[in-house]
Length: 217
Ligand code: DC
Image (cartoon, rainbow, N blue to C red):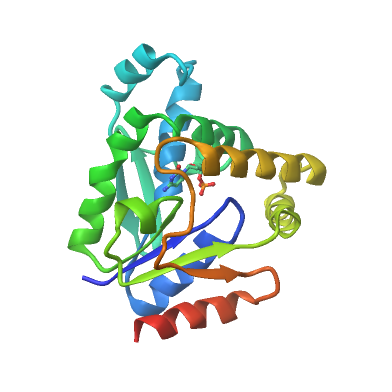
């Protein structure tokens, strides 16, 4: 199987790029952030504080996260229910950043992610794919962009969806989330030694996509 690992901070364009690369190559796109978001959504819905280890473990034992596909669309199932419509809020993203630092949360998703890559050609994006989940991936990319550019992109995305957005707050949240994701003890976001560093601030989406595809052939 061919595995492409794309890691990087929030808003770097990972999912847009990974989706297009997967489509062009006929691979499956695996959005691991969506899995962490599904767990975060469950914790918020049930009022569980991820700092409360006991409550967290008890809740994790009750939930099952799975992925299915409708055409190119990845459907995240939380106990069999499609939660795609609930996991894209800033609130869920911020909770996912906190809860994904917990070893029990990471352990709950590790095998599922590795198993998908074992059985399929995948483009998988996240924070620790090249370093931890798929250390033997044939192509590894560390995709980033300046925090200002990333905040701008997320702001536009939200406005286009008709949601409210505050650019300053988005940038502050992005910086906070970067700090948490990069400095946590377990599986922090960092560039794998054999990953290519790609700053997309001044690249078009197509340029990044073509560049990644050229590494597969
Ligand atoms: O990529 P995203 O914004 O959907 O991810 C949400 C949070 O999930 C992010 O702040 C960190 C966490 N995450 C992670 O720890 N490991 C991954 N492989 C993917 C996401």
